[in-house]
Image (cartoon, rainbow, N blue to C red; front, side, top):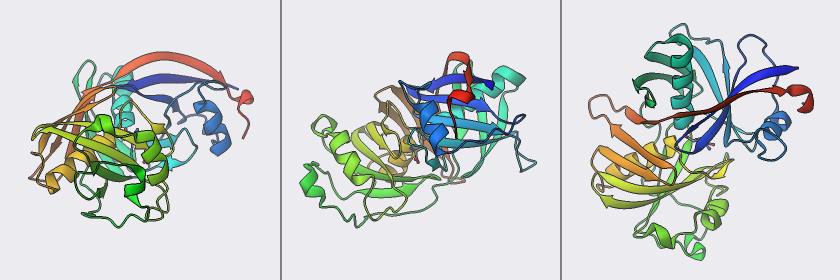
Length: 274
Ligand SMILES: N[C@H](CCC[C@H](N)C(=O)O)C(=O)O
């Protein structure tokens, strides 16, 4: 069975987006992993499945699946790419995405610049008792790690010099710290000044990506809570930059940045059995 898909990325964090609102095709871990595989499949960090919204206030229901097959509650860059796709299809500039993390208002700022309201930070851990002996990870910490959920769990390590951190060696271990039975995204942050930071994220279920939207939000929230940053911050990631604003009035976290259509294709799902 041939179905269309869109291949997009948000500053290098890439996605396969499938509109499943008509066919309601089943997807399980085996099929998701195969589609996300960069050799045997189309290849992406996350698979994004669109379907009809349950909440009447929403335009679309969006689910995010990491390349490892597990589902994530939130995906900032994926939400921005869906907004660009919806704009391309409906010529509107404002949408409401229904996600497992809640309703996300989104906005087309410019042709390739999309803004997502990621909602309020969901939980607060200031200093977290990680079970792993962080010292054994040769992680040159600038203070204890912090954690916050943006609809998905993020741990943030502040370091003096990001070039001295091996995000793969550390991320692989910390993603599965017993403190996070469902795993966690591990962010490494070097403050540049109060309104800019360098961030790399080892993503739960996807590994080291070129960018992580919810990770950028989590990094700014944790930095503000630590007194290290202002509520408006430019987050510099390997694939590009995002602007994050943590709104004091309503506690919402806004993320703005570029998106890109890579290509549109067709995939024969008979080659991707359940
Ligand atoms: N790996 C994340 C989901 C994707 C997040 C990232 N791609 C973003 O842009 O927010 C998780 O398992 O929670």
